Image (cartoon, rainbow, N blue to C red; front, side, top):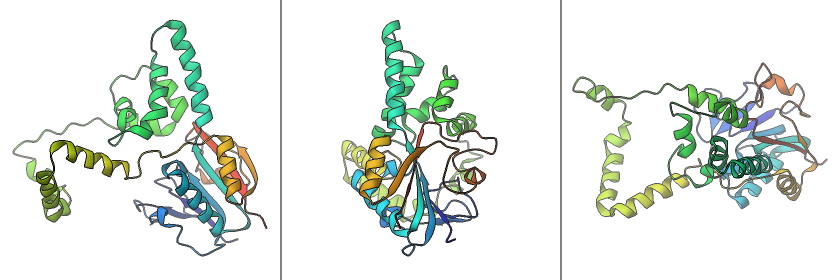
Length: 278
């Protein structure tokens, strides 16, 4: 056994795996820019796993990244790829559209599915319309949203809504929370940029920075397009599976796609596994 690796793990990882993300926010996670490849030697792992990561790469970058996954896998090793399911979201959209047309008025479910489909690709600020809706006080179709995107939506909904009022008593404490780089050169640099650019150009710069930050979706996949991409990268024995199913031994014990009680973490997902040929 050569071990397992979880790429783009975020806060969802297992201590028995190698865990990599763009920023190491937890102990046991290695920080690495995955657009620069995977920092391990050829044939280093029996299993490569990544969830809701591939869609953040541009189309050609995604192929390059999967070829890196192929490189670090041992022969007959397994790759498990989890992405938002384009087919599932489109079928849901068409169903909600029919309901909307029959009633001749927009419904909360129809509005949500449009946001879910497009907002993650076109948003110009962090969170976008999805974030605004999920943090609002009244969500009329909460059950439908949770059915669509699961526990992550619940976590956002449960986050306390706090408003900070700046007073003479607390402004010094708030200032201490500002990162040092923004107090010194970083802040001065940003101020200089604002002085040099007109308002419209500065807004365009901020949007450009955000769209290159890695938050937005650059592409989407269905079961056919993901299978074809895996085939192009050399993988064989490709199959779609459920969140609880896997060739990986004791898969559900790792609680990466499911919770200990069996709840699916991201029910809007497409799960696909493939093998590196011998």
